[in-house]
Amino acid sequence: MTDTAAQSVPADSFPVKGMDAVEFAVGNAKQAAHYYSTAFGMRCVAYRGPETGQRETASYVLESGSARFVFTSVIKATTDHGKFIEQHVAAHGDGVTDLAIEVPDVHAAYAYAIEHGATGLVEPHELDDEHGTVVLAAIATYGETRHTLVDRSRYAGPYLPGYVAKNPIVAPLARRNFQAIDHCVGNVELGKMNTWVEFYNQVMGFTNMKEFVGDDIATEYSALMSKVVADGTRKVKFPLNEPAIAKKKSQIDEYLEFYGGPGVQHIALATNDIVASVRQMREAGVEFLDTPDSYYDTLGEWVGDTRVPIEELRELKILADRDEDGYLLQIFTKPVQDKPTVFFEMIERHGSMGFGKGNFKALFEAIEREQEKRGNL
Image (cartoon, rainbow, N blue to C red):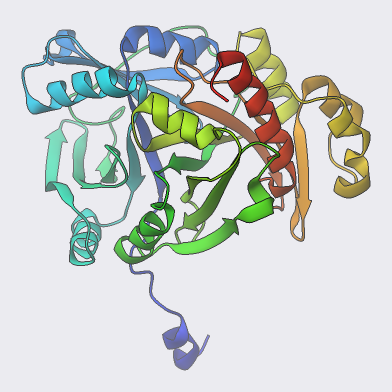
């Protein structure tokens, strides 16, 4: 590459390495850790609680490949942190508090974000122990969600200073159900989607990747609008949804009502064998949304050949979609707590970087059937 060509490539204003962790505030972290170990096949790797000197909260760190979840519950709230967790669970039920992002330079990322309009929550600081040093900072995003910015390049411990390594809660599975976080979806209030898209454009230098509006993303009864922002490498992808006016209550309206405001709706988990993962997770008790047989009657006509035969997709209720770059296979769980709020997606990509546009109608109709059972449609 010539010097001129090199100069013509724009520098990434907010470089990221990828998702670091998804942090949850929950009513009972020990039980949540057991559920995600047994049902999702994740491996418990670290812990912080009274036995380690943290008397206010208990936190369990679970991993599957590069995907990392942290579950925290309050034992006795005495500081702002403990009170925040306690109040978050009281207001929202179990939910996501933090979409942590790994960055190469926390000081530079935080400074850029603040300069471009972000609300700072925690200024850059270092945490140290015998395993090394981690640099952390945090900014606010929609609702009570935050982005912690993490640089762990000089750290070799199990998670963060203050945490200790922990043995798996259950025997590890022979194969992982998923390897990474593919994308994290946020639901925001009516009229606020573009505000938050602009936030990610300005504050973090993310670009608009996809847009779904109008008939793209509506059924006979409910509708929503969605835009996807992503960093330059597409390692971090955040779809943002808002409700749209329709005959009945959309899944976004239902979420906002029961969550008590904007927040993280679902987390998509990347798998290289969705069939094996779904079979294993179903056997462990995970409930997935149902899809009518009629969906599969014409699926082959527009999706073409996929790694998994149509009849096996039909058996497992897995959806398929194809675009100009390839195809994907996906399936969605039912909400994983009593409130109809947070759920998960399993996704297997073969070239396609889309989000299953061809499946929106089938997916939303499946969600509507569940809403109707709950009396919330």
